[in-house]
Length: 120
Image (cartoon, rainbow, N blue to C red):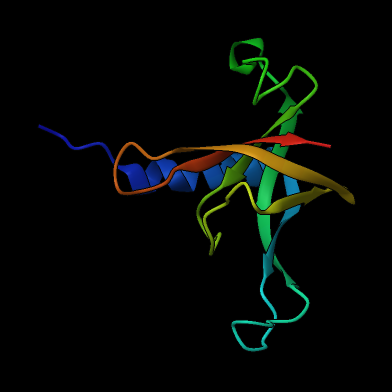
């Protein structure tokens, strides 16, 4: 029985997003370098990514967490050094978005792509 090649699917997702998407940034706020009780101002750390931003699909709208005015972002997992979380921000075409939900396609131990639900 042939096993599905998830790394190949991951590479295909990257290739398609490079062809049809654009560069974006995942911004992660990390605590300052001070002691635990007073770490200081958080530091924004940008992580480059390849992504495409689209209108939300009605099937994804639940009325509470995901709204009809939100957008869907597909982010290539290959070459992205961090896993997106809802505490990160996403910047695309100089516009900043709040991540409200992360739904990664990970049918195996390989993340093919990240599907983010974002709000302006």
